[in-house]
Image 1 (tube, rainbow, N blue to C red):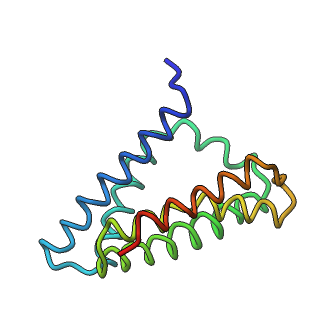
Image 2: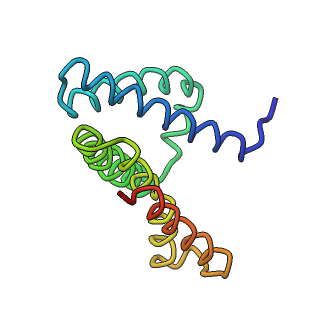
Length: 143
């Protein structure tokens, strides 16, 4: 069964939003540091994703070393470690409703990186989407 990518994106948003709510509650209830929260989240995700993608691991030796370094540095260090550490520290110190809209502007920064790298093209649709994203964040995070 193939699921429409937009539905999967919506399920992603729901999972991240609801999951973030429970994570913050768990941090506060247990009086835990953000680092403990990100470690638990990452450990559980590694196990689940490792099992779910086990058949795909055989493709790793086929990849260029440069591709693997991009995954390690970009995905592991920058997005996975730095991004999640900042996110957990932010939700530990502020209302989730103020932090999540800002944190989930990540597609905006992905598009900006693509524009700077020359792999994305600037279209009216892209500009309108970026402006709507920024406008939405401003509305959601205003005091």
